[in-house]
Image (tube, rainbow, N blue to C red):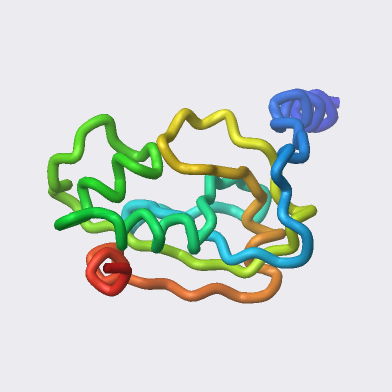
Length: 135
């Protein structure tokens, strides 16, 4: 009985997935920026940004740093360099697996579940390397 109530409460808290108006057809490379020690379960929802959009943004910046990238993807309010390490996880995902994001960030963001993102594998990079190679 208690297990059934707990399951219902958990389902009630699951976010709904509204397809974004600009959902890309086919597959898309997206990036999840997070602290190095941050781990998530298979049903966890992540905010991701199209990799091409991040690379385009980095190329337009005169001297981008990690703080700028974190601010751009909505991870931080300031562009100050962080004291902890961050990673960029890159996924190739079908456009229909993406949902509209409620995250307020200067960049285009989507939401997707880890299980949908990781289905085709992923690439993990230190965020500092992503910033320096993105220029």
